[in-house]
Amino acid sequence: MPEPSAARRTVLKGAALAGAGTALAACSPGAGNSGAGSPATPTAPVDLGAAAEVPVGGAKLYRENKLLISCPAAGRYKAFSAQCTHAGCVLDKIEDGEGNCPCHGSRFDVNTGAVLKGPATDPLPEVPVKAQGGRLVAG
Image 1 (cartoon, rainbow, N blue to C red):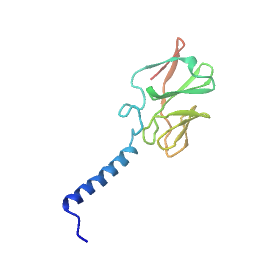
Image 2 (cartoon, one colour):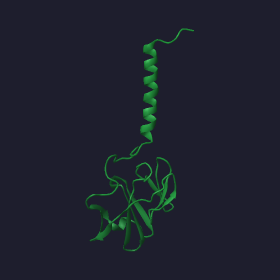
Image 3 (cartoon, rainbow, N blue to C red):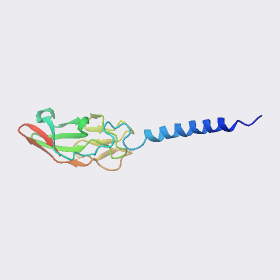
Image 4 (cartoon, one colour):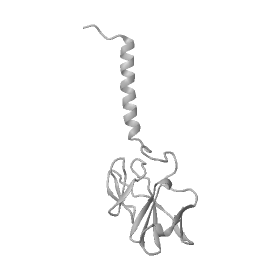
């Protein structure tokens, strides 16, 4: 059987490398992250809106700000980065008191930021938050 031409080999090698590069990019930090390249925590105060939007005993995800806010008791708020510590994806939902990472399935406790399920091994970074005039300000 004749050997493929050099040009054909080059095209096939290029296609294989392009496919590998795409797969690698899909698992890289920031993949699936709506704010790739921006910091995991706010660098300036962020007004999140009405404090009443976070239910007592529950939590709310502010994906556009990459923040997760919980309210363990009336008037008490805790804030965490909503950017997964494994690959940098932004959490996509809260279920049963757990924040979910859509990229690789890591789960975090919304009240402590602790890892409940890997592959993440580091907790979500805590962010300062306070209620001012009925509004939440984080950062």
